[in-house]
Image (tube, rainbow, N blue to C red; front, side, top):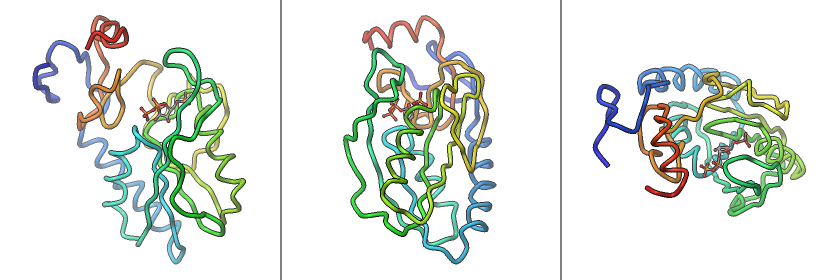
Length: 193
Ligand code: PRP
């Protein structure tokens, strides 16, 4: 695989959807809102692995509030790349959230099924509040209506990689978000690296 950046996408990436600067600036805006909204309250950020690793790290560093961090890893059962809404917990939170203010941090909401299950699961643990920050949302793909307190960007219904998002585990480490060429998508999705 060749090296890529926003000005030289190589052969597999098609088009930049969000630049590194656009992502950084938007996270700073949302961090300022979160700082104001949760002032004086004890906030726990819950990142959903693996996709949310980048946004979690950048959001946490942009906040001025003294937050604590925890992570969950979940897997949606179902065929291929589609969520089924039946979710299995691969890694649960380390600590109880009873009485805590929780902000779930997600990279992307596609069908909304994963998040809708996750929010219901967290609400059943008697927290003081549960809200969601999703950096990206695909409104046209939503099958489960879900309330998002903070949204970074609305994207069209196309497959994107980068900034935590993968195709067959590739491209999570891009600092920007881009589409794949149809050929690269087919090759990677077929497991042909
Ligand atoms: C992605 C993303 C969300 C979910 C969104 O995770 O991080 O958790 O899919 O899809 P949905 O709205 O259709 O339910 P994925 O299952 O690909 O795991 P990953 O974060 O480890 O890449």
